[in-house]
Image 1: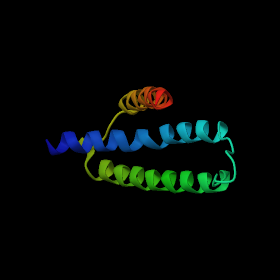
Image 2 (image 1 turned 90 degrees about the vertical axis):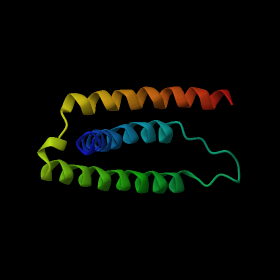
Image 3 (image 1 turned 120 degrees about the horizontal axis):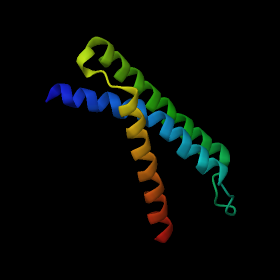
Image 4 (image 1 turned 45 degrees about the horizontal axis):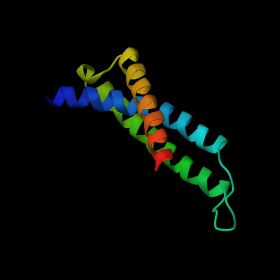
Length: 100
């Protein structure tokens, strides 16, 4: 059970940074100022950078775990499939939030 959790953790941790980079890039590309109450693009980029830094640290920890426990290593195919699933979920969630 612990090895399964470690493998899932390493797969998810390695798949999240590229997915977050794509999602945040799309959000920055579609950013629009909405009047005087808008915080602006600079604040949004600062928040996005903080999120990406946290995800990168988490991916580094997952890499260390996989290096220390070879049975917790994952394959590139698993990481790519997880990234694809996360991107599909991001698109679905975006469409659901637009309907609200």
